[in-house]
Amino acid sequence: MDYSFLCTPWVLGLLGLCIGSFLNVIIHRLPLMMEREWVAEGATALADTEAVIRNGASKAEATTLGAAAQAQYERMEKLPHFGIATPRSRCPHCGHQIRWHENLPLIGWLRLRGKCAQCKAPISVRYPLIELLTGLGFAALAWQFGPQPATLAWCGFFAALVALAGIDWDTTLLPDAINQPLLWAGFIASLMNWTLPLSASVLGALLGYLSLWSVYWGFKLLTGKEGMGQGDFKLLAALGAWLGWQMILPIVLAASIVGAVVGIAMKLMSSLREGRYVPFGPFLAGGGLLVLFAGQQRVLGWLGW
Image (cartoon, rainbow, N blue to C red; front, side, top):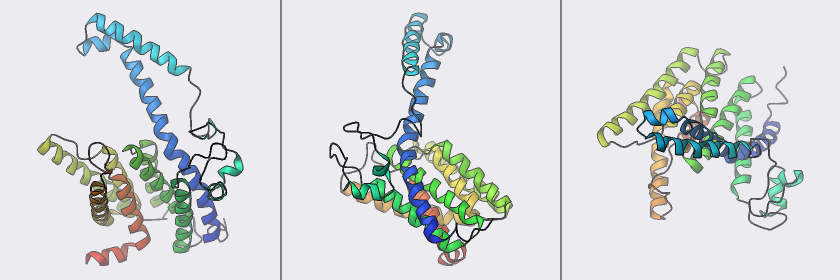
């Protein structure tokens, strides 16, 4: 396959704008889809009266709870399908269905001047920013890696990190539906000789996972609290699979420094969410992208290795 046209900065940049529009959908809808699935699973579990009794409830309590759970499950079964592609996007304020030309990446938001075509409610600037970020990122990857299949693989890596960062910032969730394919895609890219030797990829994944796993358990044993979510381990494992074990420390250092600065700034502005913390995933993703664009040799040089 001739990649000389597909992997030019202009072509990949335009593709990135379109992918960025799709990432906005993923960031918004995937957590809602997960939430609906969890509620359905919880209702199914609570409807099992014998299991509820085994866990300390009386027979009467289990029967009442089971009936309520079964009723909730039946209500959820009647809800319209909700997925990535359906229903079509609508304004959350007035229900106006977004038309195709209003949904054009970047251009649609600019034409509408950041407002709904019908009710004039503001449309978050984050939507065009994610589209622009993805477009510029894809163009930069084309510039850096040139016309080769690895460039497309790195574009997929970039897009996954943007989606994970956006979801984690909104919900403090790092979905396995993205984390796990990102990890395995890193191994596949190594097998295809697009990134690292396979041994370096596997070692990077192990070191990435175990490093934060150790911090998590050390903090929990000392304080009795959870200092981070388990999705952070999986994300750093995926970053290690793509970037190698030598990049784990630089990624964590960059994420910690930037995360601390942002957290302090948000605290001073009284904008920290309930629980007074910021999610770590967006900063891990940012650290991974910094390492990717800087290059291994330059990063190792910064560390004096």
